[in-house]
Length: 206
Image 1: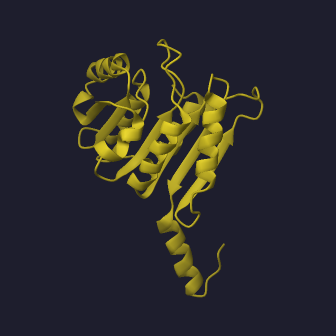
Image 2 (image 1 turned 90 degrees about the horizontal axis):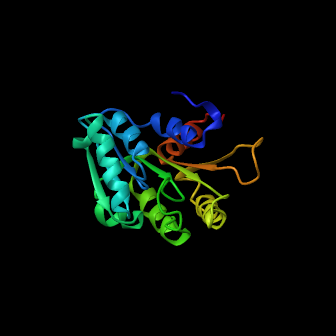
């Protein structure tokens, strides 16, 4: 069901879905209850692959069960590890990385993603992206610890080299001050090279 622009997760899915097609590869950095992993697995199809991370065994069991229900478990590798281990466990470039920060819905709310590990993970994620690949991240400043984590993510994303990455922040303006935020990162080196080639050929930047 299309939840429209009122859903931060849906916005991240829209952004990721544009570059993730059958045969592609992706990382779910926060498997949780498995719905984001399911979305990614559907996009890549049986010829693609998804790597999903979560520190909680409960989350991975739920994710596996959901994938099995939809016949999509074969194209997913589940890691019981923090997403900061991404650079150690995922070797090949990927088309997309998806984050849904905070705590496991229905689980222990004291177990949350944290700024230091999330930033370590993002450092690995931007290096894993193929040309034109994208990262979609949903943060929750209203959750305990969420504001500090969102601020750290925004600071990290804003500091990325603009010649290599395009970065967007989406806020739901007519919601509460602490409404979810969406951070979108695109590996944009190819676009910039095309732009430079046009300029060098005597064209304009428009």
